[in-house]
Amino acid sequence: MKAVRPRFSVVVYFYLVSFFLLLGFLPVVLTAARRAVSPGRWVASVVWVGMIAGLGYYADRWCSSERMRFSDGLLWVTSSMMMGWVYLSFLFVFPALLLAFMGSILVALSGNLRRAPEYSQTQWLRLVHFFYRNRMRQQ
Image 1 (cartoon, rainbow, N blue to C red):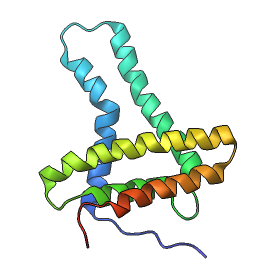
Image 2 (image 1 turned 90 degrees about the vertical axis):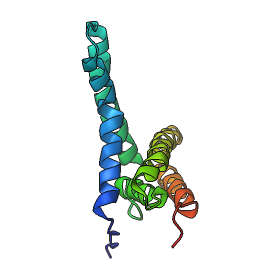
Image 3 (image 1 turned 90 degrees about the horizontal axis):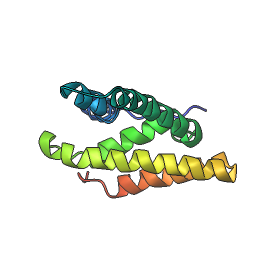
């Protein structure tokens, strides 16, 4: 039996995509905005984009399960931290997503060190439930 995926609004996807675009490409934009930049800074900013993508793939590989995929968990965190006010939601959603993303990397790493993917999947589910229990807008 296949689980039904939840439906999220376009705004939730917008926040999630905006977060990863800012997280990945902000160093490149800041480097491009400077007048004189050493080649080392350019290399570091481009490597940063690849590192964020690689860490996202690593967390996705270890934290996804049949109960909750990694991307669905990030969508739940995003949806839980939205307040209904666009500008104020940015103040809560982005730090929460940063914590969830860093937490997923730590959870994936600990599951990898234990050689137990089910540990990573269970801990990821608990992390997403934490954000859902402490959501900003009560329904």
